[in-house]
Length: 267
Image 1 (cartoon, helix red, strand yellow):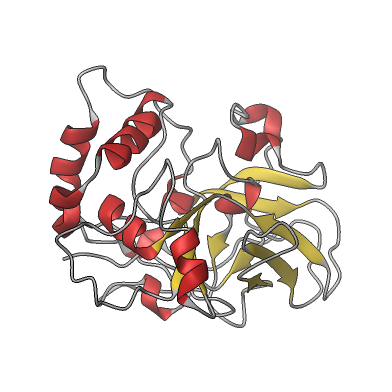
Image 2 (tube, rainbow, N blue to C red; image 1 turned 60 degrees about the vertical axis):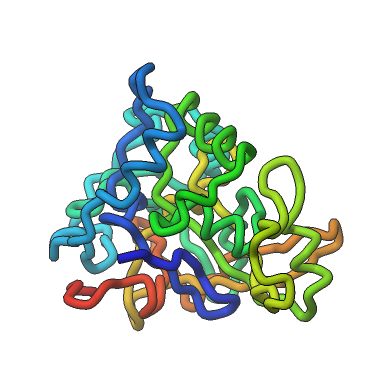
């Protein structure tokens, strides 16, 4: 079944088409030359839906994480290179890669920004939902091919949704070279969705915060915040520490209930 990929403003939620990419942790692999955008669109519906219990675990602590310096992990994308020196991108048992702090972080401190491509809900659905793959535009196919050419994934698991106050702002993000407006055969009277999305999946368009793993309350130590329009006219998403975070702790936030499928074991 389709998954609606999204985080809600001030209350994050996201769904996924397999185990979370934050939990896989492997560096992007170069796709086969035979793979093209049409092939990816045709295979989205065949992606597995099950998630094992091992995919979601409690946040790592200094006792169970063997800190690995960033020199031991490929730092070959802008997202990885944006990692501040006081943080470590490290293997986390049962998760893949995660972010460990190498210095104390005080309660209420700004931890980092969540950055990515901004798209409307309509564009997001077209590109990531298997049931809408037949509606892909030429711009969508170019976007997919660009991901493949750079070894980036297409899971739809890094989307942060932000509620909008009016339709005018939604329409601003529903056009452009990376998206496209409503299809002509769609009901013109339908009210546009009232959310836009920050998609941090592409490591060439995002920051280190894309590697933050999940932890359920009270184990999550940061909370996401967002505004629909910042000083530059773009949405803004950031993370604030919700308690003091000690050296060696993994930085995690609560993905929210709607991220998970029925039957998933969440910790």
